Image 1: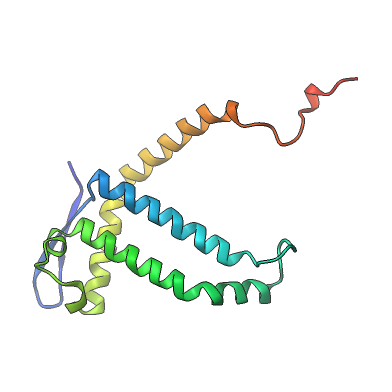
Image 2: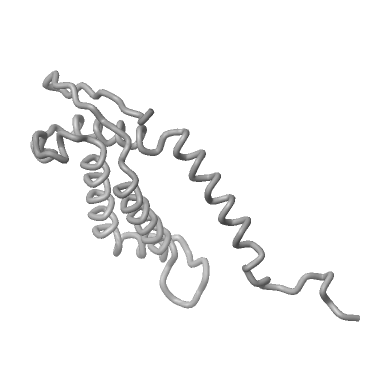
Length: 149
C-alpha cells in the first residue's frame, strides 16, 4: 500500500500527501544527490591546502549560499508537487500558502516519500550494488598479503 498522509491546513482544508511515483522519485533523488554534493563542495575550501581553517570553510559556504538556498527551495517545491496531487494539478498554489502550511506539506511529503520502507529498501539496494562493485574496485594500496619477499 502506498503511504499517504492527510494534512490539515490553517484554513481548515484537508490535503492528501502521497508517496512519489518512481519516475519522479528518480529525478528527486538525483537532484537531492546534486544538492548534497554542492553542500559538500561548499564545506571544502577551495585551493590546494586540504582541510583549511574555519574561516576558509565559512567563506566558501557564504559564496555558495545563494545557490544552495535556491537549489534546496526548488527541490522542496518539486517534492511537494510530486506528493500533493492538488499542487500538481494547480488546484492548490504553493505561493498562496502561509509558510506554516507549506512547511506542513513539505514535512508530510518527506515523511511519506522517505519512509522507513523506502529507506530500508534503498539501503538494501545500495548494499547489493556495493557488494557487486567491490571486486571491480581497484585497491588503492597493496595488500600485505600480495607483497613479494
